[in-house]
Image (cartoon, rainbow, N blue to C red; front, side):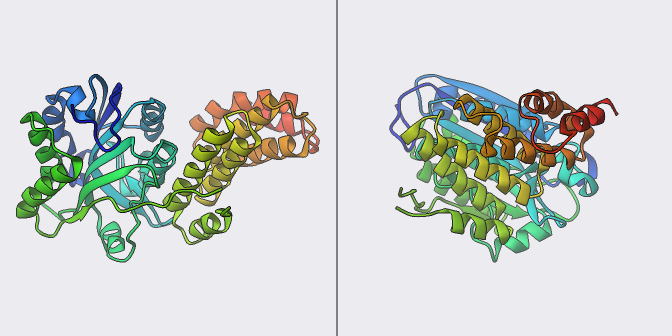
Length: 362
């Protein structure tokens, strides 16, 4: 039995995600590869005796995709993400996004999946347990950045990324996901090949179709060490706009804190707060609010008092980020939890609870 890169023979999880805008904005026929991937026995996809398969065909909502990815990332066994789609650059925030079915250039920030969300969710997993196989079309801005930024699609120290990126065709028929289809055909052949071999053979096949493609293969990744202060490097990456890199490194340190100290520890809460602030710097108030709320609840779970400055600070920051959320539906979804925490942690600003309930009623 092939056990992937980790040698783990356990129950695995495979996520088959194919996404591209509907209509003229579609640069890759992403969903066309799903039948070939779905025909591969689940255990062959993950290299395990048994496996669960999650299929996401042209999803509409980035939060839904995030929820499904988060659930898959929480599974203890090997995880394989097969991803076909197209990349676009949010010119306002300079962030790379994976387009979804309703994505248009004007709605990119609200209808596409930020690439660094992938890094944040997959980066917390143990090294060697996560493999991403991606076949991607890139808009001109992303394609240009790939030539100057080697880690543009970095997913952190844990996941192993194999892939192909091709410039999106300017007109005509959407491109076919030939690279990922080749993986599917090799898997279905019954050969139990190492991932590196599957990548090499698929890259050679895809290069004959689109010779201008760039191919992605894993490189050695840094491992956190307890005598090194990672905060300056994380902040520098975030301030330079490399939000995916910053989120992935923070997620790796959070995983290390969870492993060493457990979920009910000051160390783990600290890294949740770091990730919350990175989401703020990335211009993601809903994500930041969600993480600050989690940090506040964790501190209360550690028996810190409601008037403890760290608890008050977490709730205040969650409240501030909640007020910045432009998506009213998302704000309403997070509002009840914020109200519950404000009732326990009123803070030092008079009328904070009333302000939340008033906005919830608008």
